Amino acid sequence: MYLRHTPEPLVVTRFALTLAEGQTINPQTARKAVALSPDGTLMAYAANQRLYLRSMSELEARPIASAEIGRVVTSPVFSPDSRSVVFSSDSALKKVAVSGGAAVTICPVDQTFGVSWDASGILFGLDHKGIMRVSANGGTPEVLVSVKDGEQVYGPQMLPGGDTVLFTLATGAAADRWDKAQIVTQSLRTGERKTLVDGGSDGRYVQDKKPTPFADVQSPNPINAAFSPDGRWVAYTVFEGAVTGIYVQPFPATGAKYAVSKSSAIAPVWSRDGRELLSQPPGGHGAVQTITTQPSFSSTPPVPVPRGGAFTGGVTGERNYDVMPDGRTLGVVSAGQTESAGAATPPIQVVLHWFEELKQRLPTK
Figure (tube, one colour):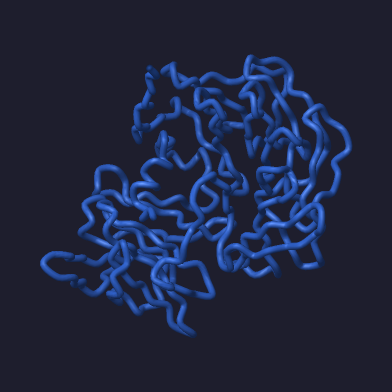
């Protein structure tokens, strides 16, 4: 007789981690500021020119003890064994043990454009110079991927097998170059480069089923797709010549498509109850419209959101606003926001086992 143990399904869990009074996530350069350890027990974040560590079993974060961290700290990444954190600071890659101690310089670098750490070493992008790899013990970085004049790289990640690198490739110097970037892979053995996504950035590899096109939606620029809270509708942007339109389709796709805005708005996001759709019209000021899905789909014309300031994208053009948990407040990250602004620091939102929810929302065969 054999007894077979069936593992319990993973439960998607959401919670907020509120930063201590006076702590502010570093606004510098819009680089990555938060990292979760591979074993899921620790979170590191950069705030107030320090590196903080939060155990999921504890209520408060603590600064990682170190004789010297640096004036500006960005891009924290855990080691594969979750015992160390590498980060960028003062024109160098540095490493510090989660237990504390002095930070050790791995190698001098210019400003890094994305960092990852696996068994093969530490990978990082160097803007116009390409993708580099250095031993976790330190040394001289080697060039893994070279780029041509006018090309920029971001967010390298080694794929399983250790022979192919996934990264974002942008060209030119336009402000929207990251919106129009490509997510590509390149073989280290042959040098062959393949484009996976044309019009996107910061792609990450997850081990699961291959993505499939949704309803043959195509656009030369990012579509900024957003699911409704109930997972039954998808709002997205399509660039059609000189006009930008926002459309909504049922999910899974049925062939129905509804144009809700032709005002060149972008970056749609749903309200928490799914009854409103916010977007960013030209000029950066927000707009909102009412959405009805039962008994049939309908939408009202967009009206301005009554607030000052503007909605603007970050370095890579990502959406910088969202609807807060109370469903009434619009949260906007303003470019150049500093600690002196006086506003309360928003909490870090954490989603555990998020991929389980993604698998539930995607159709399976």
